[in-house]
Length: 331
Image (cartoon, rainbow, N blue to C red; front, top):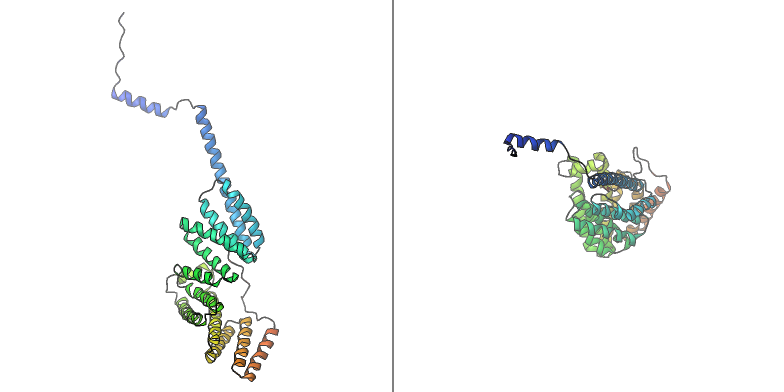
């Protein structure tokens, strides 16, 4: 019996068969079902843990914004313990932000050594992973912390390093801090030179704010969510502190007449922005410096005026409400 051979398939039949095999799936194995199930569970877990992380970070921000630093630390420490086990994206950035916020809380709670340790941990991660924003924020808090600890040389090093990265809108504030540290180290000539340079930058900055032409100036107004006048007032307060530093340095250098002129400038500026505490401080400084100059009558006159002003109720300015510390951007 002759067996009939199979007819070879044409090209069209071959293409049609391949197409049907793709459209008609074969039987699903148990391993495939398990893989799909595990993938769905992993996705659900990732979403839940990400949601938990975001909510925790918002809680930390809210606590810092309201000034409840102990509550913020409770949230942060709890999250820090759980973070290694969480399936979330960009863990190093979360960790750096967390250490930065914990450092801020410890600073506000007076735990300065721990605060410095947290900020250094944040800096290490920021440098390793090139997180510019976290780096600058940690530098800010570390500088404030070591300055408050009395390590003025370290604080100067931090401020000088940060000066290389900031916009000119922030530079005069950092220069004023350097001047303060130099003053505390009794390096009066250097403090005077740095303070004068900062004052010059403050004057330029106020002009730029008024014109809003310089790059970063409009951002400064927008970032503070404030009016132009409000930002100028904040700059003026920084300028006031700088004037005091310069006047103190002048007095320490024995330049009494120049110191008197600078203290008077401080008094005038304090009156312009209705800052009563700075008015009292300026009057007291004038009383002291006139006494040192041998003019007892003028000294007594300023001291009496300072005493009267300090006994009065604080001057209220329309729309001048206490400001909460800004929340630290953790995400």
